[in-house]
View (tube, rainbow, N blue to C red):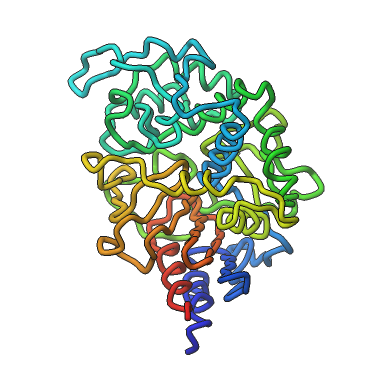
Length: 391
């Protein structure tokens, strides 16, 4: 078997075993395509073939895009890492912290924009196992209610206590939703307009948005797996099998008013390839600068202090990784559990989408599928298959 066939072999094994319905991939090295392809079906249960340019719910792969928007606004002087969030929304002033023993204490300092982009603000997610605040998020529909506006989500969130003192822990959560809200207030425009103007139009990401228009809905792939994010980390993992999941309540596809920072975007492999490619050079396909070289350097630098490492997402460790301005960053390859390189960055989505960028190698990959709450290591196996192709 050729080294260049291994990505296809991994994908075929997973789709052939009906662990995932359909998988797409694209890997480039120094401007040359090393591997690109697809395996399986749009709907393996119905035998529906993958359409041209399938559209995916990319969940948390929305976060790096919104983080780049924040960096663009910082370059423009409209936003700063040291800004208190309460400057943009006073409801986030005078926050309380709920201790694990049930007592409430005032936050000892304001939440800063830097805390949002590095997940150290005190927020969480409903599915974070062992977090004492998570049940409150579930009760108030913080992430699960896709019918409420971003402003309403912020009203609900600001009324709840924080899970820890700002800046003292890394805890994955809704921080980038708050960052999106701050970007709207800082720029005086809606998130969808800002993303379209500053990122999607310059990069030619014509299929990326917070809704799927009627003429593209036949390209939107069905979702498999669980339907509720609170089911992401079951105490007893269940065998992975294809079953339909209705996620419209959390992730509506036809609402013109829906927008979030931590999830919510629909995109294609080709569109996200354009975004990943930009993270190497900072430039658009036309050669214009989207992010300055020094901004990219800051984005790629770890900001998590040693006492807050190793990073974990709930109970899932990320050995060797730190966190930069909106992306994971590989700091110590000696602790990595799968092929990577120092400085490799990127992120993943809850429905098993994934991307990595290795700036030192001028190397990146994008992998897309639709399975919410997968227990199998598809992304790691695809990344390993990509890295082993490097000359």
